[in-house]
Image (tube, rainbow, N blue to C red; front, side, top):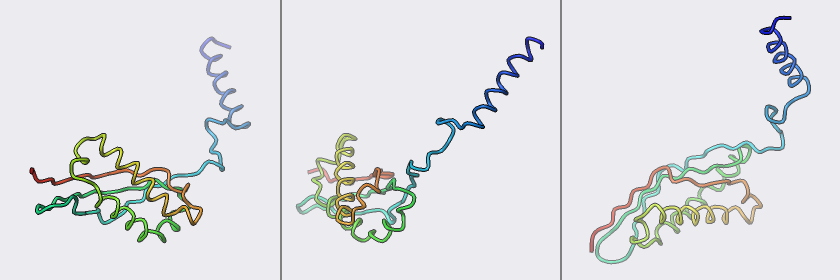
Length: 141
């Protein structure tokens, strides 16, 4: 056997061994949940703050959910949207300026949607909440 053939033979034997026995890195574990993204359309547009001038917040929200739970989550969509609208509309305009503020709000929004599903035992079906769009219009006072 040539020196070039030996590494090739070893690689083929290794591949054959992995394909026959299965590799944890290559095999897909059926117990591992598969995740999907669900857009909460249309975007959320709420007025924020108090006073004579009206300030607005527009957000686009996407949920990362268990793929097999999309139908149950869709069933609860009115309650999920309501919880988010109530949370977003309570935000003081001054707390929507920095990306750190956005992250705090994102965590609060994730907790809010999970709280909606908690009584149904489905809170763990939502892995994450993402702001895929975030625009605030705050009047200078």
